[in-house]
Image (cartoon, rainbow over the protein chains, first blue to last red):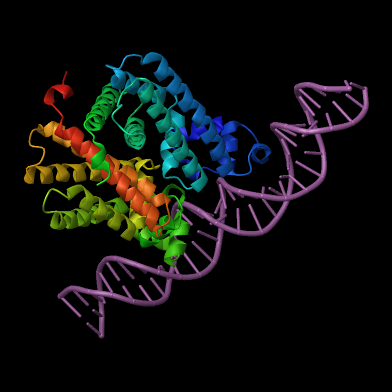
Length: 195
Length: 195
DNA sequence: CACATAAGTGAACAACTGTACACATGACAC
DNA sequence: GTGTCATGTGTACAGTTGTTCACTTATGTG
């Protein structure tokens, strides 16, 4: 699995990776692959599971560091960017998988995002934010937030990992996106949703 | 180029498509490929160019049909969904390319999206909407809108092309996303952007 | 018509692919 | 120790890949 991630980190697309390539990178003979996975798709699914752990770690750190609401967005975006840098290959894999070849991997990543969004909704409820929103509207808002952040991933991953200026730009832009969404949510009225 | 799109439409990922595969689908001998393209990447770049035309057609239709502002969002989303259905393979290619293997294709698609966003900003100016926003803030807003719609693409393309109920769901959700962004933009103040 | 250029062909190559099988090695319970 | 697994190895095979070259065939212009 690390070998596959390394290949992805080197710029290869997961959909174009083969068994022999992965085992070569892992320093192991091709046949060994079958001891652990039934196919490359299977490998992908297990990577999605591990990606879930990475996302949960990120969430935990965000919860620990974002206590008061005023700098919520900036801090969260900062933590996100930091994790995306630290686990570059994992997030690359995630970005690729969203429009990837394997339907199962695609669905897995989508489901991780749904989970993330629902956790975010819980956190906002816990912080007594957006209390005027119905549950459905809050879920919708969090979905939009997660999507926006996920899209920033493609920005982040397309620039080189040590271009601090550009990274700062992405962070600033993402922060503004989220601020705008929050303002929209703040002024949202139930009636607008159901005409 | 059609052959490549057909393969993408059948579920293959562009990054995993080879010369022989493309020519086989085109009903032509492998060597013929080199008469038209230097490499698969080159093919991808030409597909991006054609994608640009598809997007422009969509834009033109939206401009022709969306005259008054009140139903602007619903109608635009409807047109978008219709075009995404009609040019499924093209939009699949677009979604794949955003996190694809070829840096050049990636940048090409990103640039098409930037162009689209700037055209959208012009249209909003022309319609005298969001006049309280600075140029930079309007651009930012349009960027966010285009991203949101682009992400809906992955939803749309992951469900089967004739599941009208789900398509309707995606359309409704996307519409709400955009409504929320518009509300946010409507209440946006310059000072929030630059602290 | 003739001629130039674009598009397609067929055979050939070495390199690589996924997968199968029988066999070797390591770790660990008894 | 012996036996049992999980893991890794080596060899083999048929199929596929990208690219080359010299060739034929279409197409359209003068």
